[in-house]
Image (cartoon, rainbow, N blue to C red; front, side, top):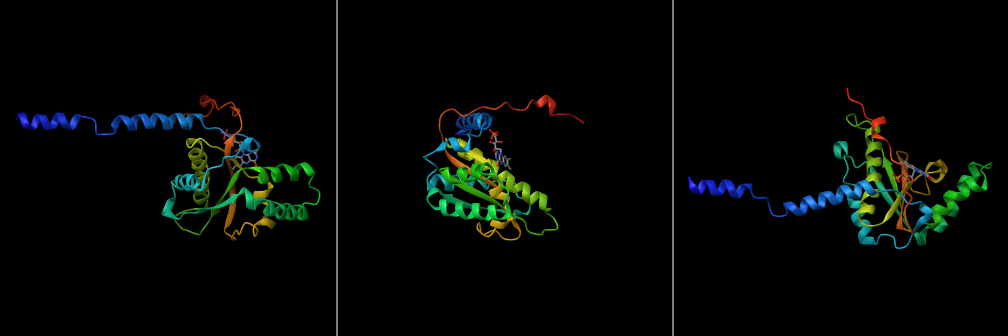
Length: 211
Ligand SMILES: Cc1cc2nc3c(=O)[nH]c(=O)nc-3n(C[C@H](O)[C@H](O)[C@H](O)COP(=O)(O)O)c2cc1C
């Protein structure tokens, strides 16, 4: 029936937006292929605005999350509020590590002070018979990775760091962390100053096997 044939032919045409979607997807792949971390000390202003950060964090939370537990949260540290916090963190660390060298203390201290913007990603583990702790922790890692990619897609540089600031138990209170919470990353954000160093990437032939 001629009418029916037309309907079949029409249904084979691409849906509106099909080509744009393909173009967007190839952009997305290009972004994923080109992301890399600038050194934290090479990040300068501008940092993401409030609006951009809102979008970055929204994308960051779009991760696999078994049982929809949301086992993570964020603490945003704008530059203006950081100096006082850093001095308290350093004092705590020195008290617990009297033999720490100046260099050990100073590198993270400077990074934490100077970055244009830092987002702390906190893993929040809750007992769940169906969702082991490791799955909740991995979901927080995925949040960090999504955050890096979202920042890159917006043209910003981002670097995922930890160091003693993240692991010093005596500073848990300063970050307002509960007993079931730990810092899994400080994501330093800003605009890369100059070209980003491109490190060698893994050789897949060393990593992939078939079974
Ligand atoms: C959980 C985690 C913690 C890290 N902490 C540090 C750190 O404290 N100091 C550091 O120099 N690099 C640290 N790194 C590595 C940096 O993120 C590094 O710049 C990055 O791996 C470079 O790779 P990329 O260019 O693919 O992002 C850490 C990486 C991860 C995954």
